[in-house]
Length: 322
Image (cartoon, rainbow, N blue to C red; front, side):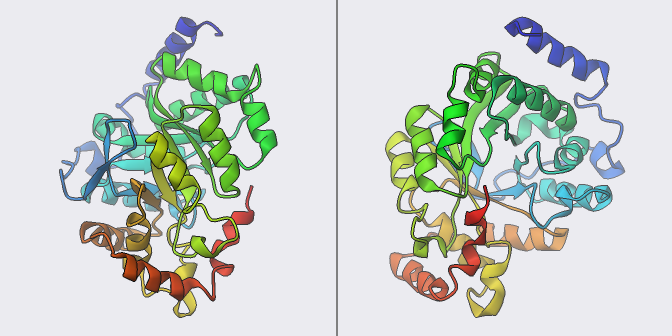
């Protein structure tokens, strides 16, 4: 299973024999009838230098959402189907997000060519990353990923392992050569300098980083460091932690998603963002905000930054995660 052709054939054969590619028996009645995906309902931007346009808003598969909770298949499927009906075409997940890949794999296969599907691996070695990629493909019921990302890269030690002679970057290169993945990315919400070092060491297509209205007040903000590098290298930027798990709306910090989303998507160099949803109603509200989005002037960005100045630490709690 180490040869390139053998590994790809193994993946295709395994998926087909399991009856999982597109023809998933677990689809709900609504999905099995195949929804018609709305076109152009959400504004789009080109994702870096990939040549691919993605909606400004994608659905996150982790966080405060049934997509990452065990025993919540019905609620998760309802959210995913709602996302499809609202024109969301970007779906983000990871091998470590509980049942998220399984839930997405029950709904998305009939729409595979119309969506952008991203997952991640937290393994730092080649073999571990390959095993996790194979597992992700089986759970997602697909034979390729649009984007495969090295997950939560936080320390120099991570990069040392990833770029070693038997590091995860070998799996990334092999999978891309075999067309099992289309694009490559690096993600992190801990240390901007580590992400920058990773982007300087390898020509990743994208980076997924934490960006919100409180980030600017952190001693080491992502917005004033990573974005300058990605713009120079024409690397796609996907924003996460946009509402800081809803904390930005508490205690009178921001008025709502219009400010949180508007701020991040008005930052120069940000291509799209992924936001989880707790239910279909919340998802629909987020989509309405994305539909109405217009870039905010610098003066309004400053006003929003002032609103978060007294509460930035509470809204940057995830920066400690590794």
